[in-house]
Image 1 (tube, rainbow, N blue to C red):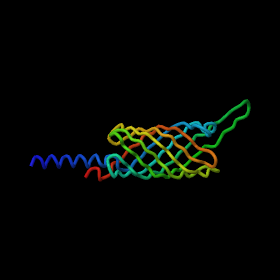
Image 2: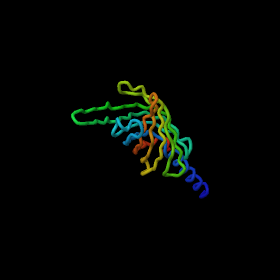
Image 3: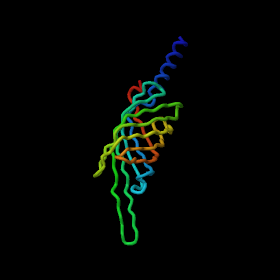
Length: 172
């Protein structure tokens, strides 16, 4: 009887950790442009929503959509002022995360970023990232975002926060 009860508890806790990262996710990030767009954009903010499935305790797979906004720079020289336009993207991507440790993840997103401002066609979107779990449902992450736009690359480094609304499977 005691062995059966211990086996039951072990399986129960194994299943709880098995789906620990599965659920609806909402995140926000802020960062700085690097590379070609650094002269045109001062600060970047973004937000995304998605859903991650956890087929096992070290691998998450999901989908994500969001918005990225780059605030334009204004340059002033003598009596001339030049204001560049803001740049916006709406990425739609597949996501993957690997959890080599209970509180640490590596992974990334890949997909298409749709340009929202005039003259912006968008392009291939990729965002490798490293995440650190700071609570049972929250994560702090650091990422590089790249979007190929015509012959140039939109590049940013960001820090973000993600909150997970755990799926019902987590509580079963």
